[in-house]
Image (tube, rainbow, N blue to C red; front, side):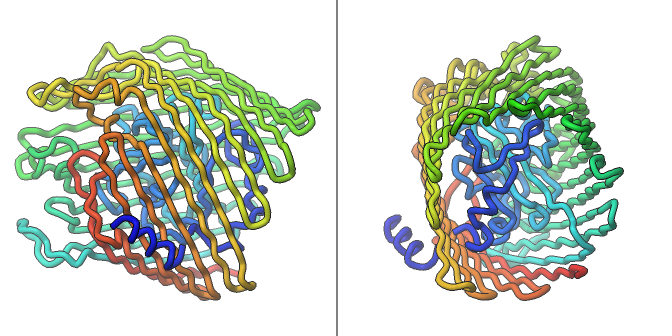
Length: 622
């Protein structure tokens, strides 16, 4: 059956975006938004992927969660579809080991990593998504143990207004549930615009999604609001501000405590904000920043009886950063410091606070013939875990005009969340205040080959996570408890092949194939223990995406096959047909074409075949 499905996929169409929009020259000009050093994409010495704005628009997706599931090495484990609730892991890491950023602003969640993808930015306003695989402490600080995802938003260039509506359904009858009948459906509304003047620009967006679910008690109401601006004080001095609000309410049947949580629901509110300035002073570049994140999480085990089984969490994170870059004759020197203050007040975690201070330096040079070297270290102090140092080095060698070789070695740290340490949710879960922080060391070797219409990337990495944390129990008679399991040693192999061609100026096709293999040793060591998260980490991941465009029409087929360490495997195929002319865009999606029944995490079945139709109107001042 699987071979027939694959044959059908490759005979229909096939991936990511229109060829003229993914031109190799354009990709080379992209600057990776690292916090201190600016590195051109074609000079990268790490495994970095970029999902461009055009790719995002071409994919059969309506949320950031859905876009990221097509990225190689990225493991999206959704509990709630349509962007409601999802965990993200990179190369076998857990959701707490992946760092999420918007424009370089870290969205640290000291309570738990379950809500890190609650992001207020609409898909249409994302310029690109940068995915850094491997330890990233030297670049972004702690908690990026296995990687980071940086979402880079657009900068408005002219006055504009847009509105987008979409709706979809599985066309399956709603299960017997009070107040609900008919079929399962979901709909969404996005609207926003930009206001641009010579010295300042402003962007404001609002979004709302509603669904009555895709099975019993899985409906959702999500609202989001996002604002950003940029003010030029002088040619080399500017200020940027960002603020966002998210309010998600959803049925949580089976999300955390199946099968007893059939009637559970969850309400999550998140507020994020930041203000930064950027200054070029001769050879010095300076960028100070202050950011804040506030989160309320109200989990109701019995939605019809709030007198019992209710957990309420209130968390705040305040961060300050200073990044500096100095240009010398030998190369670029990056230095900086940051401080973060975290606190929580919770009904079953208690009241806790902690402080974190980081200091970093980095140096990059291209003065050696065909070589470029990036070396640095991050020094961290945490009020609970004392001092740690995390060095790293990246080396690239341009063997020919088309072939580039790279090796890198890096380290990183993750501080346990307040949930890991102090949760008291008997009989289901209990924390462990004696947990040690996780640290990882990863070594990697890779190659990148590009020539005309063809590109190829491949590599091997070995990662050793010391004091790896997961939740486990010996039997179902005792609660899960967070534990340091020892060393989690992972061997990984990845490859990515891209090919694009133009039949003529208005007709293009692009194919992208990716495969990742992971072998985490710790899974083999705990076969007789019930592990909550690690046992479901990726082992095999294959992806095939193909796009074909003709004049105003385009079609994209996006396909993924995954096998987890538990031997749970599934193949899911999605399709988007789109039409765009002047100010109007129309798209039609079919997700899970073959009606695959699968689970990404816990006991939550994902939606079966789902159809979605959308319309977008955008006015731009010429």
